[in-house]
Length: 258
Image (cartoon, rainbow, N blue to C red; front, top):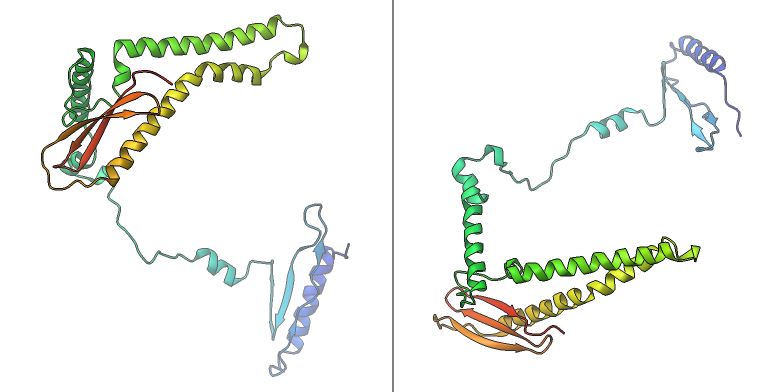
């Protein structure tokens, strides 16, 4: 560890430099820079940390800490702007007309609810859904039968977890107690059928989108309805081609789960 001068020694050194500068003030042509050796303090985190430096330029003496020069201050206080600035319009500064164009309001949400309830009633009554006006995606699980199936799946998953916990509590093996992995495996096994069904439906949707992208819409303005069979999950995909708007929607009807 290098020697670190005490504060009294540093002050005496500074006063000596001041006297030397006063005696040599008449010789302004003899300008020299005296920079003493830096004093380092050893710390556990920083073996060599500079404490202070004293500099003499002509008859001017300045003592400053490392990194506290005018250049560093100027860098910290500098402000820069991006070359391409974009004005952002905040919601609080929008007019009521602009706000209604960008954001849904209570009337819009109420209209969504009414449309969803109408679509659910059509599904319950086995009515043919005109998917130009109504979309069955996302509301099929809202029917009474679907709600009962969802609740049964949840109860079965809960029971699988509770049964595994009870088996661990009643067991004599201490290593098997509080085995979170075994509980997770029991839950995954019970939910595998739902996971597989969701995966197969997603694959069918992917095929539908790929077929629509590869097809030629043409100039036919009459909507066409076709029935495609899905070999992945043995289900039926009801496809509606809306040639006027270029939008194609599909309603997946699963006849038998894989």
